[in-house]
Image 1 (tube, rainbow, N blue to C red):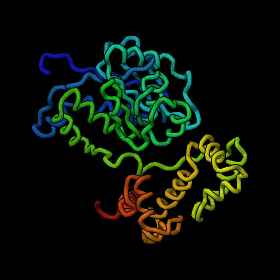
Image 2: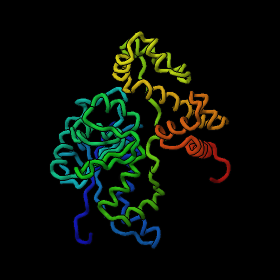
Image 3: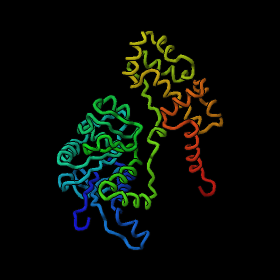
Image 4: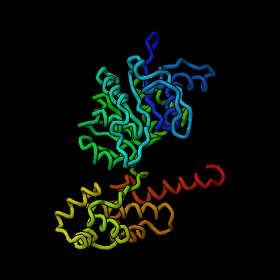
Length: 345
């Protein structure tokens, strides 16, 4: 890259952005080529990336937590960026950001048309969805936005298990999952623009490790209650306390007074789940909590939530969580040890 213009990475932010995402990305990307050399050889190298914080107006503001942000410039003054990162823009899982960011959406469309790589972290993917850039593609965001994407952006195949979705990479679109997925995105961008070795070295400096298990082990079922569909809402309330019984879907159909096909259609419309998927999700959520805290064996946990066959429990659990019950228990016991440290881990 000697004598060449450094790749320009624009971090698009707004008052709804998390400081941890913005400043974490800025710190890591700006240190590329500099920090590793300084730590290993005692002499800093050259900055390899030109990193700019940009916003719609380019004026100082405070982001989430009342943390001050002073953008380098407004979006209209940005030179042609090689890549744009839409930082997270927090919104409630029930609050679709329609019409909330018109200038940013228009700018993203323009930069993509001009050849820039467009990326996002967490809820930042909602801006890409609003811009229509994700239509016909697979994409990810934080797992909590699964239902929002499925209901309001049906042209997008939402991958709630992914941490870094590269399915649309050829079309210059990359999306990252939950807030800490900026780690994975930053390593990807460094490798893309500066080379594999710099990505590895930067990861070593900041102790960045990929989320190789995906988002699934961390996801929690979101269950919007109070559906306008009375029989379905009643069944949701009922099944919350009876998910472990045998043939739960048949009993919900009977309770609703609907025929099986109509019940299934209305249940999916109200919840985003097929009835059996909903029951399985409830069972797995309870099993996860028990594996995190209880002393029951894995098979006993499975039986408690409704799976008499241990093999069936392990199969359904791994499909939904991405880990076996034993691996899940081990992972979150480790987190528990970190939360309540005794000595050195």
